[in-house]
Image (cartoon, rainbow, N blue to C red; front, side):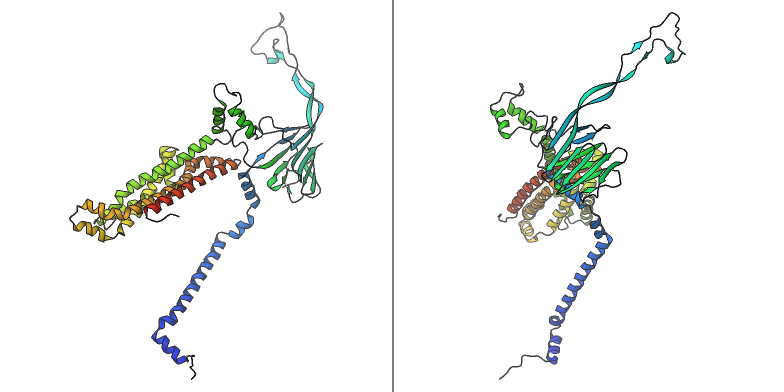
Length: 502
């Protein structure tokens, strides 16, 4: 006997009539999912058009972004080749060069020669002695006064050693050579010749390669060598920016007697060398030089980081203490007074509706720049947020435990102590710990507006637009602190909530 497993149309309609949710429900879900997907797609298209994302991405200067990123993990040495009117050159370094005051790097090769140059020097002055017939008058012009001194100026010829040729070797494939007002730039097998004509300006010979740019004829030419560095070629000066990986003078700055010494030399001076400073040991001197490193300012950075941690801790602690009793007034199942519930909740809304950054600006004007403004901003914002979270936790407790304590005749305070607190205290502590860890990051942001801490120092380093390695240093310190606090906060929350840690 054969069994016909195929249903005819009448049987399908009968099943659909008895169980419409099986047939039409799934189709409605499919239509709903398709509409949601289409809505999201339309919103993304609208956002792309409204915010001109395509144009922003097209016009973005990704080269500058790469340069900033390179500045985080490298440093530059910036010698300038100055060219005088007679063609004589001089290689000078910035005042605070990472190579120290007497910089002679191997990658800078110079050739010198002696030249005779004329300098204006005042000759010996002779005073005319007054004669018997000479008269003095206040109304007489200065030139008519017989006792006035007249200085004569005549040129003085001196012999001076000047740079006749300077060669900068960025690496084996990149170099800049300057001689006789001609710059020869070589990069990745390509060579560019540039004439420095005082009358016509900077004149390249031939077409500019991809790594050279000139906005207008006669103006300076910028040579971009990627991660290696770059150079500006002008008529009177060739500015070199040679980039090296790492952080220069991170331990000792150029003013330290330990500067530019190897680890073995420093260890030998500390443990067996003669005292560099008669007033203190070499170990004390080395530690002092590290803390007061003028370029990295370790002690100041660590102090500001500690301020940020204290701001986050104190602000969160005070917010938890104030929000704790207020949340009982806001919870409808604890305080049976609608007016008091609403007033307390609106107070929480007011505190948390104003962003922490706005509170920080307000308290900075009130108290002046410093950690007090930051702690107050965190305290105000978190009081409102924690109060709302605490009151919601109270409104969702299990009333059976509270009713059980009340049934034995316990006082109202004892009912809250033994019937309510055991249920919500772990939640309260967990939320406070989370906000403490989150406020460590927030304290960095509000510090940038003057509320103290490392945020202000981070903002100062960013505004210079040249100390990006210092920015990277502080960002790494902040990340380390956040990671530590996050781990500690997660561990404590897991213990409080009765969960196992892995």
